Structures are given as structure tokens and as C-alpha cells.
Image 1 (cartoon, helix red, strand yellow):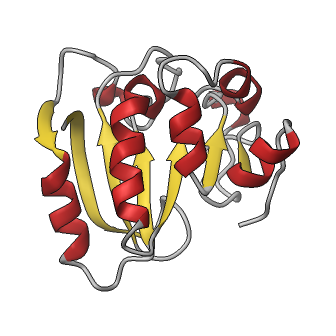
Image 2 (cartoon, rainbow, N blue to C red):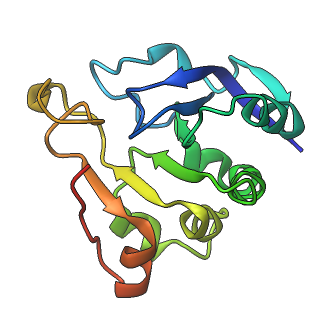
Image 3 (cartoon, rainbow, N blue to C red):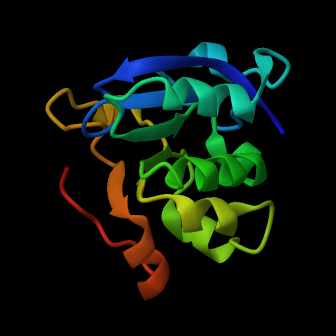
Length: 166
């Protein structure tokens, strides 16, 4: 199975708690003003990578706490990422997924486009578009104050967004 990515980072400390392997997917419909990854917006950019190559890189780093899916928009490749996340979770790692969609939209549309499958394997969901006017350097793991850190399992069980502090 292959994914279209903009790139990866092996030892990120800014994409969630602990040491993380971050996958930046290619393609984003949101195109937020002031996005720190504008090179990931074009759906025709990036390159393809086999999920086995990502898993091999993750396995080769014993310091990792988990894997983060960022972008671009991960939910544009939800089906593929859900399969990759399932394999990563077998390694005892957690999954963080960033999205410009809000949880309510994804929950309402969970039966479409693999959204529900990616939500089910995501431990922490960081949702909401980046809003340049709400940019805040003081909040952890988010770019703007409207974005939320959610316990994805609790949110799915409750049927509404359950926020957590990281």
C-alpha cells in the first residue's frame, strides 16, 4: 500500500508528546492562510512511499513514543493511513492525527472515505483549521487557539468532542 507524502521527520518533539515519527501527507483542501506547510497543499506534489518503508523506519528508532500524521490533510488519505496506523499500533505506539476538519464533521461523515477507520485508530486528534489571526505560540502542539486536542476514543464513544490537555 502506498501513500502520497511530502516528507517525514524521524525525531519530532513538536508534533505531539515524546519523540515522534511524523508523516506529512501531500494534498490539502483547506489551504489555510499562514499554514506552516504550504508545500503540502498541492495534490499533484509530493512522492509515493510504501507503508512498509515507513514501518521499517519506525521500527529502526527505539526512542519513538508514537507516530504523527500531519499534512497536508491526513483525512484525504484516511483509508491508507488507517491501515498504516493499525500496523504501527501493533508495535505498541500511539497515533496522533492532525486535521483541518473538526471532529463533529468527521464524526458525522465517519461512514465515508475511511474517516471512521482513521478515527478508530487515532489516539489523539488535533482538529480545526489553522486561523492566522488566532496564532498562539504558547499552546502546545497547535498553531492557533481554535484547534483542539481530543481523546479520539472517548470522543467516538461519547459522540462529541472530548478535549484533553497535553
